[in-house]
Image (cartoon, rainbow, N blue to C red; front, side, top):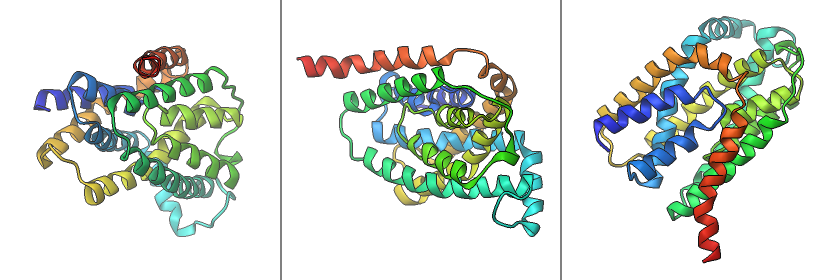
Length: 266
């Protein structure tokens, strides 16, 4: 993959991360099908690219993060105050998503064959679309969080290790199902992604490693996804609440399943 390709997918990551259409699944498809990139490395690089958008989210939610850090000296496990509740939510969701995500990611590395991997992405996109079609919301906010919601949302975030399952789509949908407002659901979804993505990147960089890319290329990829994410996050968080992205997910997912179904028939 040359530098121009890295920049293209990094910019795309920064744009579509905020939309409930699985940035990971779509980025992997572009890398493997358009740029003929190795599936395993495409999977790993898609996780590295999330580091850039996590930095964008951290900047966007810097006030909330600042208050959480300041509150740590008075923190008590539970949901007695708004920031205690947010901190407890992030801790429990990160622990549960890390366990599930590690198991799923390790299993995905054992999969051989682009057609099977693409079909998994397609199925994931269809599931994402179906979930989005049925969501409802109310007026709950951070004060209504509890341990059950934190753990359940974390587990769902772990399942987003499956390419095609939109992390923001599945976590936001669950929070909306639980009657949280759209703005609260989106904020919680992106804030809980920060420690989870950082943990995933540490695992990739120091545990698994990634071939065919130099350190400077990884830095460029993260930088461009961060810049693109910063430019687009405000607009796309508003758009994500209005456009019917579930149609896109189901249509693209169905198209990706076609090669797998043809293989079965033949």
